[in-house]
Every structure is written in structure tokens, then in C-alpha cells.
Length: 332
Picture 1 (cartoon, one colour):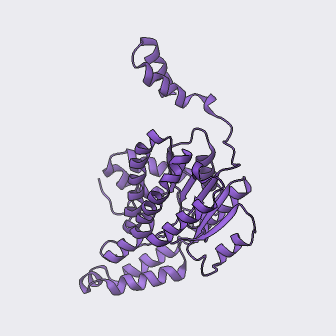
Picture 2 (cartoon, rainbow, N blue to C red):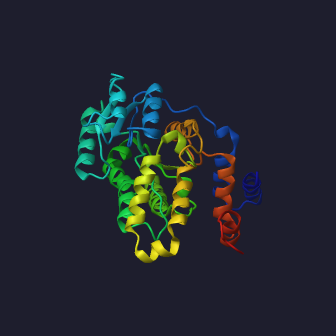
Picture 3 (cartoon, rainbow, N blue to C red):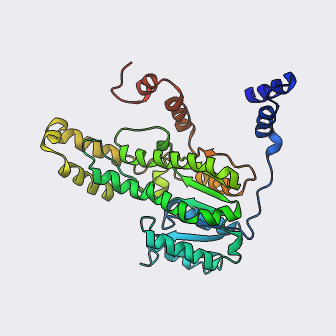
């Protein structure tokens, strides 16, 4: 409402007409249009073995897209890849794709070019979904931890995007990057993950500005807690990470923090395994809108009200106040 009033005022006084028209165009309700047709459009999705990627591949297929489903374990006949292959549809193309491998990404590009019915018209959508999660306070997390998470979440996204951009540009299509609310705000024990997601957000922002001249839209999806829905954290995985974190810490760190504190911290992480939303539809619907809307948002925030409010507080209020509200031990 404020922006509508501002736009109208600028028009009335005769100044800033171009800005005023843009504000009114962006915000007036008549911008709601029918979704773009999926017929004839192809989308490549990374990380389709499970979670968001697997569910999205099925959903976009039902809507009429041709789906290139990149799976880490396709060559090993992994369960997720096998399930997608068993659909036996000529619009569901399952391919081996480790986003950390230059060779496999290059092979994926060649496969898509060979398979597209009209490769000169390009690839409509790229959804960078592949990623991993981890935990560990800074003094426990090794540099290898940081590098491993960044190699998949950040550099994997950069690698795949650079490889497919020529095809996306031909189609004047969409690049949709899955980040997280932890790509906008931070949380104790999640620095490895946050760094990677903040990096993806920064990369996406730069790319968005570069791609305007090509007619390509670059869009961020920033989900909240969907651990229960995706299975990205497991008890066994947390135990293995915890053992590596403790054994890798120096004697001084072990003594200062103490085993009791560390054990409590691990238990807290395990409590998140069944937390968050169990229904992925908020995320899947937002990704679908990003690919099919004539006027997609630059950022989508599929999350519960609690996390949306917290995100606004952490990103807009003075840091000291935001920390005092949400971070244990923080003082004003």
C-alpha cells in the first residue's frame, strides 16, 4: 500500500515517472496472470535422489515439463534414481550427476543437448537443489568440514550454473537456486552451512543483475526448517559427525567446553531430526511458481509464520536487539 501511494504521488507531481510506473506495475493486483505453459519446456534439477529434488521432478513431470533429473547415485542404481527411471516416461530423463565433478557436469550438458528436441531453443529451467547439511561450533568444525559443505552447496551451484547458462540464455529461461533461511540469517553451530548458503545467495544476486539483459530470471528459494520432510539430518549421520568433531578438536577445546556440554549439544541436534514441516508442498509450489509465473518473485520464503517473523527481525532490527531476542546468552 505504501509503495502504491508513493507511485501515485510521483505520477501526480510529474517527477520520477518511469520509477512510478514501475512501482505501480509491480504492485497492482492485475499482475496475476495464468501460469506459462509447460508443454515443450525442459527443466534440469540437481539432487533428485531424495528430498525436494526427487519430489519436484515428479511434480514438474505431472505438469507437463520434460525433466532432466540429476542424481548422485544414478549409476549405482540408487533407490531415488531407480524410482524415477521406473516411471518409463519419455519426459523423465534420469542422468548421473555429481555437482562436484567437472566431468560429470560436462557430460550432463552434452546429454541435455543431445536429448532436447530443439536444442537451439535452449533449456527453460535449471533448479540447483543438490546440497548437504552439517553442524558443529566453529572451534570443533575443521577446515575440511567447511570445504566439503562449500564444495557441494556453493561451488556445485556455481559449476552447474556456469555449464548450463548458454542453454538457459537461449531460452530466456529461469535459474532457480535453493538456498535457505540460513542464507539470510545465522544460527549457532551452523557456520559451515550458513557460509555456503550465504555464498549461493550472493552468487545469485550478482547473476540476477547480469542476466537481465538476456531476459533470464534468477530466483532464490529460501525454505525454513523442512528437516522432517527431507531427511537431510539423521541420527546415525549426527553421531558420525559428532564423533569426528570431538576427536578432531584440540585438547584445549575439549577441556574448555567439556564432554557434558558437547553431549548436550549433540542431543539438541538430534532433537531437530523430526522437527519442522513434514509437507514439502510450500517449497514445491514456490519452485513451480518460479518456473511458470510470467512475473516470478526474486525471492520466495516458504516457511511458517514463526520463522518468517524471525527472519524479518534478524535481518532488519539492530543486531544487538535481534541477538538478545533469539540467541541464548546474548545481552544488550
